[in-house]
Length: 134
Image (cartoon, rainbow, N blue to C red; front, side, top):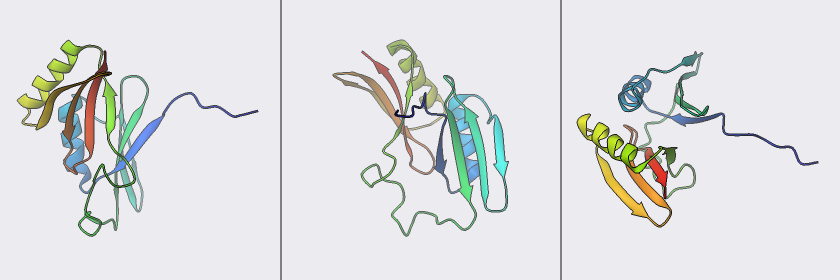
């Protein structure tokens, strides 16, 4: 019998400066992290997102600044982007306004055959997207 899983519990991304990233995500999401892990070599703040998935921002002691590896790129193996669902096109427009009000550069709403997307990047250039299906 094949084992099953029910959903994604969390995504954990590595950041260079935890406090800078936490401030950015608090500004975008409008709420603070729900919990944190702080041990000898790992510091993580966990945002409890609507729908039950958690987003962990992790700073590792002794990590690199990304310069030697070229930093984040959606074209390199690994994470392409984090897509967050919104309820409607109107809600997506509200997110575009929210990002603009906070000085966060974004793509504007882009239409695809399957839906509408609003893309932006965090301080470490990790790609994020708000998305609504057609």
